[in-house]
Every structure is written in structure tokens, then in C-alpha cells.
Image 1 (spheres, chains in turn purple, yellow):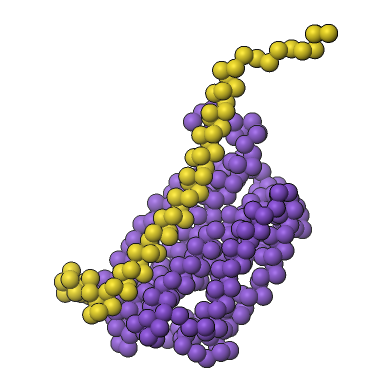
Image 2 (spheres, helix red, strand yellow; image 1 turned 120 degrees about the vertical axis):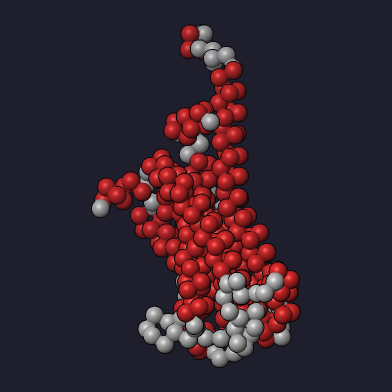
Length: 245
Length: 68
């Protein structure tokens, strides 16, 4: 257990491991995303009430689900970096922020486009949408806060605290559709039975959620690799890497 | 396929513009998410390669310890 912990703290080991994971995970992810999009766009029946506009669900829900899950990753990495001063946790925290921000942006934009034909409006200040907007600002806040500090050790600490404080927003997003009944519909998929979605729509949706998780993993690893190279550019192993290119 | 023709798939009974634009925007963002870190990594490596070349091309630093 401790050796694994130490290995994860080793930049060259993490760099090589992520490289060998990305070699097969990245093409697989792209294939899964394209297949899932084609499935959702062309091979599923339309919703009996919303017609074809509901097809946005296959990108909107996965993006939102993974944007939320990404926040956990960032906050946990932030906690590890605060408690154990682990540099690679700091790298992971910083690598998550742009990925999470992009996914939250996708969830908001696709939700807005879906809202126009379904609700008749691009935007409402409903609890779910507002709390997702706050999530976007939290991600952007972590990015901006890191850039604002000249001292990067201090920046990492401030970002970790911000991401931990921001976790109060996560249960609010989850529960918002139940607490405040508004335009946004409640969850259709539940772990504890009572899923209110037809299998012909559920399977492509689950497929896309898995594909978005895989995409998140790929982006996280790519960002971590870029960050590791920048931080370690003075070390012998990175110089060997640059010379061999 | 659910749709009868390509044009039916494109218009989607009036919802096509919404659905296809949502997918297009998502595709652009996802590509950007993958390309941005890749370009950043390439830039770092290229800068470092240039630095190493310059270092190799320079004469070795003069040993000043023997100069009095």
C-alpha cells in the first residue's frame, strides 16, 4: 500500500504509466463517443412528449454527471495535497479543473439549447441550473486562483481550500430538482429501483455516461502529463525525454 | 435507423437545428479538451529540445577557479 502511494508520488513513473494507459484508452474512448452519438442521434425512438429534441440527453446528462464526479476528484486531490503535501495530488487537482469546467460548460450550453424547444426559454434561474453555474465558477475560480499566485506552493494550498469549500455545492446540485420543484425534471435513473426511462433510451444513455467518464480520464491524464513535464523540466529524466524526441 | 431519410434526420421534425447544434458545440469542446493539453506538452518538449541544442552548441564554460 505504501509503496503504491510512493510510486504515485513519482513523476516519471506516473508519466510512463499514463502514457501506456492513454495508448489504448484514448482511441477506445473516441470510438465509444462516436458510436454512442450515432446511436442516440439516429437509432433511438423519439420521446413521446418531447419529440426529437430529447436526443440532446445523450450529451447533456453524461456531461453533467461527469462534471459533478470530476469535482469530487478535484476536491479529494486537493485534500491529499493539503494533508500529505503530495505534489502529484496537486498536479491532479490542477489537471481536473479545466476538464471539469469544459464539461460543466457543455452541460449548461446543451441544457440551454434543449430548454428552448422544450420549455420555451433558453435560460431560467432555476435551482439546478443556477447551482451548475456556480460549479462552473468554482472550476474557473480554481484555475484563476492558481494563476494569481506567484508562489506555486501557496497557490496549491489556496486552490485545495477553495475546492474543499466548494463541495457544499455538490449535494445542492444533486438534490436541487427534488427540493425546488421547477422546470428541470427530476432524475429519471435511480440506483434504488423506479427508473422511469425506457431501455431503448436507457442503454445508449448509460453507454454515453461510461464514454464520458473515459473521456474525463483521458483528459485528466493528458493534462497531468503536460503539467508534470513543465514542473520537472529541469530534471534529468525529462531532459533525456526531450533529447530523444 | 429510426429516420426514413437523411433529410428527415437533419430536420428532426423542426428540432434538428437544436439537436445538431448541441452535438456540434459539444464535439468542438471535447476536441479542444483533448488538443489543449497535447499542444501544451508538445510546446514544453520543443522548448526543452531547443534549450538542450543551444547548450550542446555552446563551448563549455571557462573554468574560472584557476584564474586569480
